Image (cartoon, rainbow, N blue to C red; front, side, top):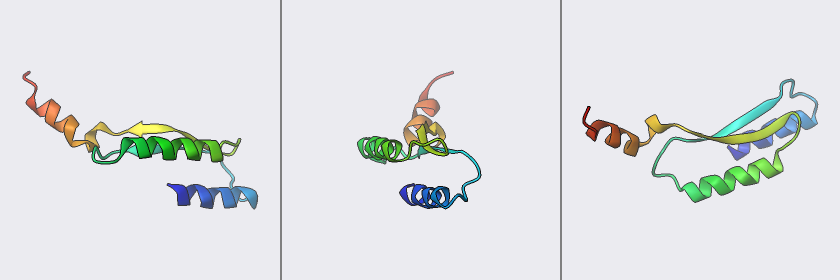
Length: 77
């Protein structure tokens, strides 16, 4: 994620970023370190928070988390 912001920031400074770009950090693996994900997101949000380039939020993909599947598969209907 960091390298994409660095690249987009470079384009923005060169006047080549033609669209406003707001990105979400994607959480799709329940094995990822949540504390690290949050700290990286906040750091990116602080560093890249301009009119043309911004870290917006964290997007959670429950379908990518095995816990979500386990809970849904074990619930009685």
